[in-house]
Amino acid sequence: MTQLPLRAQLATALGRTAATLSRVTGRGDGSVIGGRVSLVLEPDLLRKLAHDRKLALVSATNGKTTTTRLITSALSELGDVATNAFGANMPAGHVSALSSAKHAPYGVLEVDEKYLPEVIDTTGAGVICLMNLSRDQMDRAGEIWLLAQKWRRALAGKNTHVIANADDPLVAWGASTAASVTWVSAGQPWKEDSWCCPECGGPLDRKGMEYVPPGSVGAGAPSKAGENDWACRECTFRRPEPSWILDDDAVIDPRGQRWVLDIQLPGRANRANAAIALATAEVFGLPVERALPRLREVRSVAGRYTTVERDGRHARLLLAKNPAGWLEAFDVLDSSLPVILSVNAQGPDGRDTSWLWDVDYRVLRGRPVFVAGERRLDLALRLDVADVPFQLAGSFEQALAAQPPGKVDVIANYTAFQQIRSEFGRAV
Ligand SMILES: [Zn+2]
Image 1 (cartoon, helix red, strand yellow):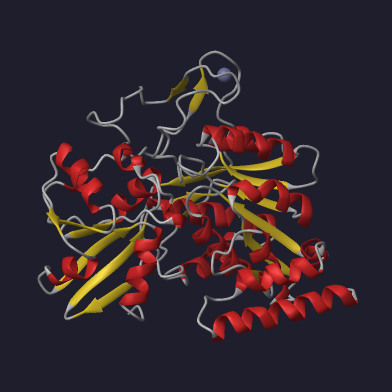
Image 2 (cartoon, protein in one colour; image 1 turned 180 degrees about the vertical axis):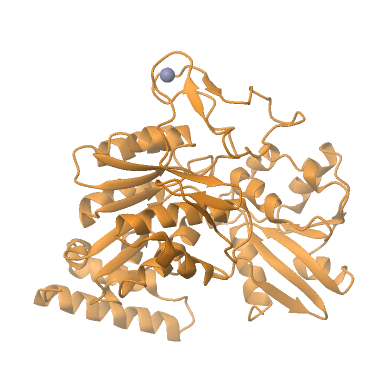
């Protein structure tokens, strides 16, 4: 790689100092503050750091941290990879990620959906992965249709290759202005945000599925392979033909070869993330037989799917931040185990938790359910309406202590998840 200009070198060095200070004073991992300091000194730093690298940007409502990790793991087969492993997914975090691996020829960056157009423009990334869009952080996130429209404008006219989930109509629409797209059938269990055509507003028809009102039996049922097709009833917009297909526990590549994924990360959503990662690796010239073993090495991502232990209770931690995420978390639950649900409503969670009413909790019937977190009363009322028996706990700690020794699953939203991780120390 070419040497950075002096001013950019100084900006990255001071940014690293700020990050170190932040770490040693216990204020976090420092990647955001370090990046901010660097950007104040050299506003054009991200462009300079991105220059000369082969970059992939990863954006979606759900799964971007995990998919970033999977792609990073795959590309490490080719050489050093710079990445924002702590999920600092705005430009300051990108500066920090790239400046801490200055000589890495590859970069894989998780990008907040709203910042994607800006980061595409600044970095000139050659590869962009787009997986799903659904309602999230209702009090501060923009309308997702507007997000997709901004993606369209950002991608139009760029020399960029997009890897996109063809099964999510809004993502397909958002990606369809790109010059070249690899379409992946990665599934879309959560359909409540895409019953209308993004192009004309008409109703979307789905193969093997008629509209089922939320809350009635069958709503939100996961699609089986081959049942993901959709088309607008009123205009020509329809699902693009996918070249990669997630087929239950396997991926079918563009040559028709079926690869059993057999990854360590649990659940359908992670198999979808792996399908996107394999299609992305191939764009970088890495064949499935070399990429897939790297995906299998990934066991947990930023604490997700890890287990914490206290007094013989082994709690497996699942993070779910919005209705689509809860649906995917239910898919991972062990039906023979009790489950603790913990919901907070702090800044990073979004203060408005009305989305709790959008989730169909009936799958939880028949197992012991414990409810904790700041918004436990809201969640309790919702479970009561759904006829799901539960026990209210004053805290996660009390909920865990109420379990018999053995395994328990935990679904928590963002700050609830982080609290459990920090209070229960090192994951085992
Ligand atoms: Zn239409």
